[in-house]
Structures are given as structure tokens and as C-alpha cells.
Length: 100
Ligand SMILES: [Zn+2]
Image (cartoon, rainbow, N blue to C red; front, top):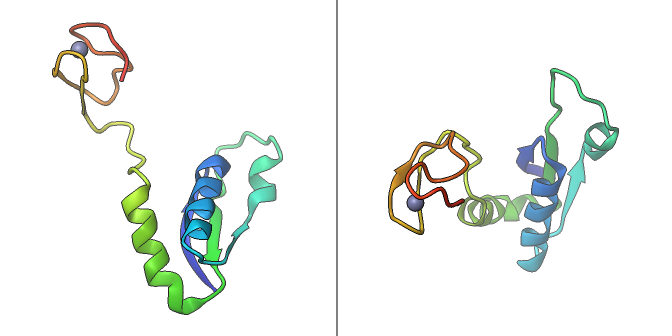
């Protein structure tokens, strides 16, 4: 078995798991009980996604890299309404007040 992905958010890891299953890659989630316990601590324990077949690990990683957007809240975004560029810390467009 090989670890191909990890994230603190169970929903994101579950999404990654379904993506791999759609591509016929057997996989399983580890550490999910740590995250679903409702504990709020300083240290987030990443939930891990493992593939059963080592030979498919490379394929799995490239699928996930293509399908999952980078989790970077600070990256800027372009408003789809007015085309203005916004800083990643803005939830709505500073110019036209529309959301992403
Ligand atoms: Zn706008």
C-alpha cells in the first residue's frame, strides 16, 4: 500500500477517494476517526488516502493533482462578473460586490 494524498478535511479526502474509485483504483482512508471526533485542537491530524496497489500510486497522484484544486486561500481570483482581479483574502469582488 502507498499513501497518495493527505488533508485535514475529511470531505476533501472522501472526494479524492471517490475520484480514484471512478478510475478503478482501490483505496482506503486512514486516520478518519481522529478528524471526525469533533476535537478542535491546535494540531490538525491529516487524514490519509492510501492505494492498495503500489503500481497504481503514480497514476493515482496524477489524477488527484489534475482534479483537486490547490488548497491555497491566499491565491488571487478573477471575478467572473466584471473580470477584476481580487486578492485571495476577499470573499466577494471589491469592485462589483459579487461572490466567486
Ligand atoms: Zn466583480
